[in-house]
Length: 224
Figure 1 (tube, one colour):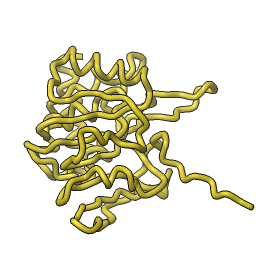
Figure 2 (tube, one colour; figure 1 turned 45 degrees about the horizontal axis):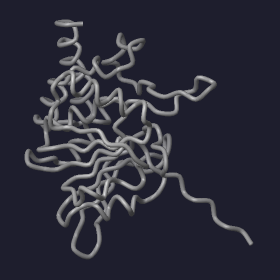
Figure 3 (cartoon, one colour; figure 1 turned 30 degrees about the horizontal axis):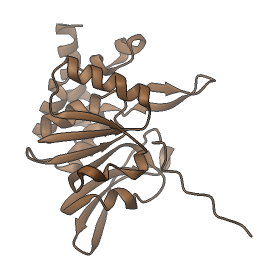
């Protein structure tokens, strides 16, 4: 896409991010610097910069069950996370690697956790081919996080979850933050958890919708 893609990235930032109150210039610059089309499925690259959630996994009937988060929502989540240049970030839900690449422009290093082996392989290949060297993709259940490298300065969930992420919060260092969209569909609410020495303070930030991340559905109650 070349020069056309650069124009589309600029329009994405001007028309989608800025109109959704993404005012942090570091976030804007990060999303301007990463070619989103490289991380979009080949058959959908013409809509790489559209204001929509692009499917990356479908069920057998063709219904999308995992998507790339809309650019404006992602930008707002990144702004909420306040990622510093020396921060170690755990990204939960690596998908095809786009968010890992963007976070890598803001952070010191990124561990991008993915439960889908095929997505993880594709994300790794794209990140390596385009020299995003401070982001690494690992595999495992998303709800468990990646405790072997904890604690993290920031944990960012790139997708919606249905319950409070206690196991992820346990991997945030004191003074760190966890950002996630809790609730599905129109009931989704972006929240930030700020970790203290004796718990975490929670703040609601904005309404947002994203596709659900696997592993975060509430367990059914046992009925006698």
